[in-house]
Image 1 (cartoon, rainbow, N blue to C red):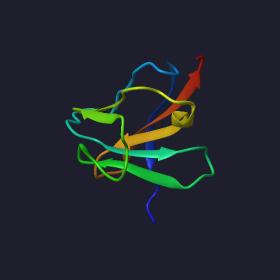
Image 2: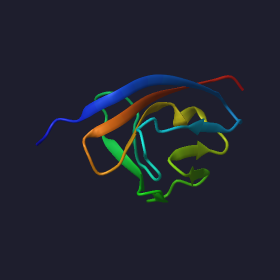
Image 3: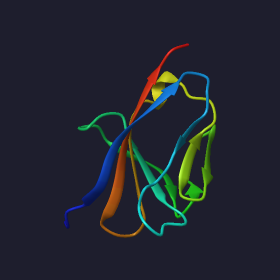
Length: 99
């Protein structure tokens, strides 16, 4: 299995009940694949493929290569990985706080 090169890693902060926009920082990307992990060693869950939501992600929307969480919950905290059909990916850790 080929290695995945993480182009950038960043931390985003969000408050419960507010919207959060996670931008995929991979150059020239119009639509992204998004993956969610609760923690580093947890299973990965596919959120979207080529800009189309997959599975049951109520309250999430795709805007270009960005993932928008319309109303953040504490369960949204974790690691989000975006990219598209290659080995370059952007990794974000979403930290959620407040009520």
